[in-house]
Amino acid sequence: MRWMRASVVYTTLAVGVGCVPVDRKPPGSNAADTVADTTPAAPVAPAAPASVGAAKLLTVVGFSTPESVLHDSVQDIYFVSNINGSPTAKDNNGFISRVRPDGAVENLKFIEGGRAGVTLNAPKGLAILGDTLWVADIDVVRAFNARTGAAVDSVKLDSAGAVFLNDVAIATTGAIYITDTGIRFDDVGNVLHPGPDRIFRVAPSRDRKVTVAARGDTLGRPNGITIDAVGKRFIVVSFGAKTVLAWKPGDRAPSVIARGPGGFDGVEMVGTRMLVSSWADSTVSSYETGQEVKLISGVPSPADIGYDAKRNRVLIPLFTASRVEIWQLQ
Image (cartoon, rainbow, N blue to C red; front, side):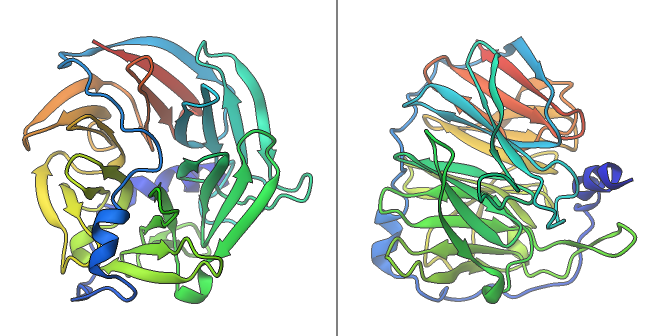
């Protein structure tokens, strides 16, 4: 079944394939990018009190293969991306939901592929800059008005060889960074890894120039990406490796800063702590000094998590269960 194939994607990614060299200097990168492009597009989340655990507050149902949750702190709303089928099918049936912090679904299909001139196939990672919501969609990043849902922009990365765009991070400069996990499906639903594993950069300029910011198997099939404003770097988590990575534009290769169970998907910064979701053991854990501290267990297929800094909450889309769980950090 198509839905079953969608759920298989992440469980088979951990099998490594091949070796791809890391670019010594990514095209289009320069020293100025290191500072400017590691400044987050939104206010830095304040450091929460040291957590010793978390308590589940709410379960929100009715989604269709939810992949990412994002808290828009200005509107105080949660956006949820719904693949609604295969993660690689250009079927134009993906949608994005608006959910209130009390768990009420304000609009299940706030943005919907095939309606009102919108194209949206398999939306995954989300990021916001001002009133613009950016969405990774297979080999395109699409932009929508976060208040109205209207389509406002799109950047095609297929000509740059994009295979499986996954998560998005945006700097205040407007530069957009997108991970490419480098996988495909064959005609019978098997997951292939043609690679290469990459991080793309889309320039903030009017021409939206696309460059490869990082490339290589050391990225470990990169999945989640976020900006660590304190460390002035990107944090990247690997689905195909057991590593949490730090990387800056211009680096020859990312640095391993922590290890864990692997099967990593989402990553969020809470002050100097990293919250990371793992399919390998169905957890969300905290990393600060390289040591893993498990906060939440028993969450199957935890995809691209979000963080509500106003309420100190973790927002967990359960990919194969088609629901979102909201947990209070303690």
